[in-house]
Image (tube, rainbow, N blue to C red; front, side):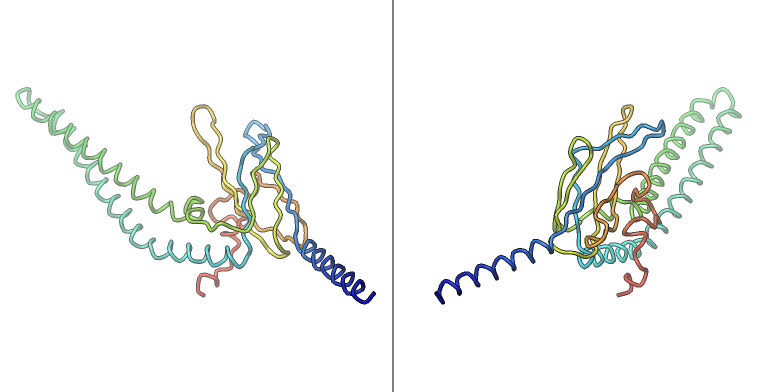
Length: 232
């Protein structure tokens, strides 16, 4: 009889432990959609949504911000230098055009060749300027913060209606990250989200136009991050 009681007590304790473990898990349900300029609600299917605990995502974002600040001065200088070279090349091209228009008939071919050469140079300098500006802009772009994201603790893909369900291992604060793309009239639109959700509070989240990941948005993890974190 004592053995039966011991076995029953052990089974009860195991059941309680399992129940406690199950209670520590939380379901986060949500949907991903975009409202077009025409007012159409487009639900995005097959979008991967990943969950990151606060203790994992904060150090990652903090490190990305430090990397951005370390790279920014050199890139800003490169943009300034590229802008100067482009302005000079434009001035040279304008001067060559004026020389061509003022040239005597016998000098027109030589002047035209110089004009074409300087216009080509101006286009090259514009390409270099655009490239430098793109590298600088990348430091604030969603792609920069999504590059190298850790695995996270849970992930799910949206269904055809744009809905998803994530099961996280414990309560607390999580960052949900997702990115999607859509073909629109021959071009591709890209969408990024990285928002906070409290797993022990409201566990329904909508990823839509209002909380897209854009620069300085307070609704995103990066925009809402306390600046002191970057000084740790």
